[in-house]
Length: 311
Image 1 (cartoon, rainbow, N blue to C red):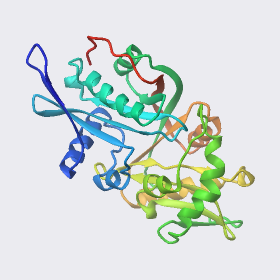
Image 2 (image 1 turned 120 degrees about the horizontal axis):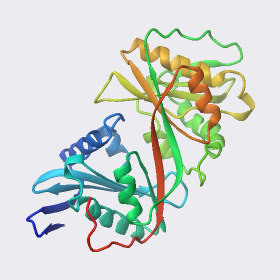
Image 3 (image 1 turned 90 degrees about the vertical axis):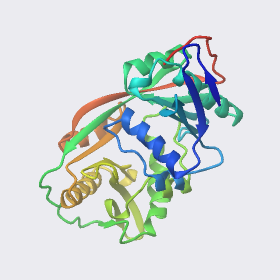
């Protein structure tokens, strides 16, 4: 889609198709969210579905924004995200992107769209279209130095997924399914086995499992960053209810921190819902500090678009 603005701005929005398109999409994310890892092209390709729409937006021939519309992990809600490079905001690109993305979500049968926002300007933009806050998440950060490996536990074993790859599917059934409802979200998370296999792990060597007998009882690890290998995001951390209070989560996290130290990683970070006090306290105990607050917003579909709204 192309259109010419009165002041000769040319905005063209097109779907992501080639690896070059995916790289352009990634570069927008890196520019807007410099402290977060961006999925690699291989990860993005692996997660492709007919329902998912990736877009890039050009301003006068240069990629200035990107967007995605997809099924959210929260049941019955679309994830609709439009990001514009800071230098290209308030020129109509975000509005044009949001229109295309929400039209796609509506056509997919969704009646609610949502996203997370990290800055005041983007929050004000979202409010113009009826988005309201419903949840906040906090970012916790930990510097990595010399990290000792924890003492081997006696009641269970700690293994890397790279050594026991067949256990990752078992971790979905035995840990993820019973623990995802515990997260402080307004709707239960709906994560499929395929999404668990493709989007919740990117390096099996950096993911650790606690195994008791023939059962996986806990999971924790890291999502590595191909753009900034000195940094990693903490992956999903959870322990089966009957094993909580026995230092399983802290042992798994300490194992991942020791692994990080041995592989040149100097910073790890994680996002935690503000209502998840137990995980925040564990992270504090392990030396994490606070950095950013992210606001989750949502709105009913279809959206109403005023004639003149710039971003």
